[in-house]
Length: 383
Image 1 (cartoon, rainbow, N blue to C red):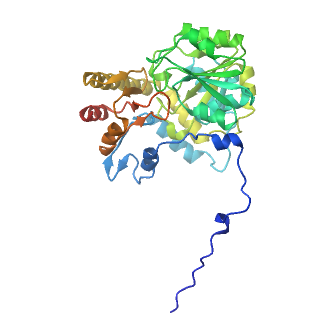
Image 2: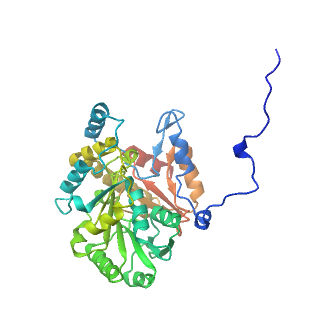
Image 3: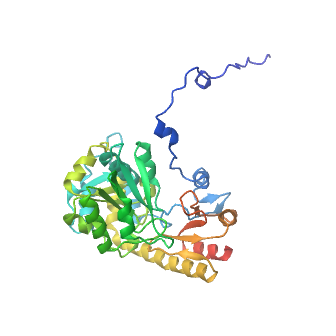
């Protein structure tokens, strides 16, 4: 039997053309926001959290090491059976907004809440809503990188105001960084990855100064559930320029469901809502978030465990001579002499952490998510 003829002609879609269609200049220059290769490799494994049948301590992306509340699992199973999955979700998410209102004890109403696809979408929407291309976003840095990426993706210039060498905030120095082009300032409380926190007095000072300059203040509270810090939501009645972002991806353990929300005054919400698609999250995700909010006892139990194990890890590393920047949240920042050496050592022992060398000035730092008690003990045994 003769062999079938092989067509050696290249796929037409891969052939080079005389003309290449170039992207916009700001897209050519854009540094993407990407997950680490270690993270993507792990997600490709047949059994999640296991590589070659060995347990992996996933301490790189600040997800909760504990599963969602059992009430979430029950709610999701019920929704999968009862909701017509061929229909679109409720675009108003009234039930979820009702639970958010309850958790915030009536300090916000439906008109102050905007549901988003995680807090990533929330940050992107704020930049797109308020910045023209000749205006700037100012980040209090080093910090979470997503707003930098989403602003630059829109052709908006991004600048940094850097915390001092001990990662402390100086208000007088900060004021000098705000100029006529500044339109949005980004502050994370507590800050990721440095753990820097802001008091009510500091938040009021910052908000008042920026309001006088007609500048929006984003307060990202992704990790606030781990802390005793007061929310900037408490200040909204006194200021028109505060936008608070929240997520269910951290303390609530719903990272895979991609649910977040914005809180601001009614006028700001109406502006930002113009850029949110009708169905940012699924009904399944909405039900999961509602169930999580209803089980505050489960949330507080897991937060207490994380806080206890964080102190164990911090004290252990300090006793070994490491410089540790503690946080009130679910991660710590550790200064090491050789990031690559430490990262490789932990990786070989199935512990994945997050080197921060991609963010200035953190070349010699790694961020470690607080794992289970056994995860923390294993890290200490290796370092």
